[in-house]
Image 1 (spheres, rainbow, N blue to C red):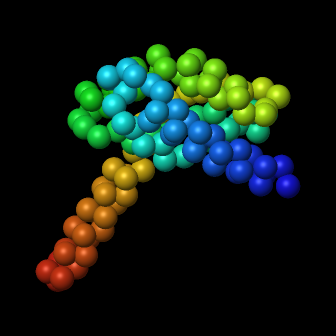
Image 2: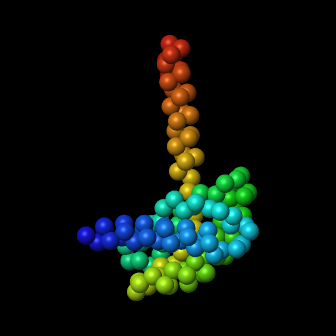
Image 3: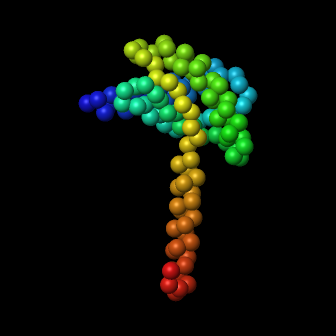
Amino acid sequence: MANRRVERLNEQLRREISDILRRDVRDPRVGVPTVTRVEVTPDLWMARVFVRVVGSGLDRQEALVGLDAAAPFVRRELGGLRMRRVPEIRFEVDETLEHASRIEELLRDVMSGEGDGEDV
């Protein structure tokens, strides 16, 4: 039961933080990040917010610096939610897509190697 509560809270925070970043944060370093998921600790003390940022590694680092600077503002804005305690916000770059692409590339290499009749 508590697990489902945390999952609902994760989804609600994802939607709210996404709206706040899109609507209220004016820092040009942030750009328009996509909030992919939120993971709140079981004690509701901290929320890890995973974001996708368009651009190179340098652009991502710059956006992460801007998001870290905006974290206190986002937390204050979340104060409107009916929660006993609004968790601290930590932004992290979501690299799930890059990992998936790398795995697909490796699988393609393995599959193409099998067609050549070579032992891998």
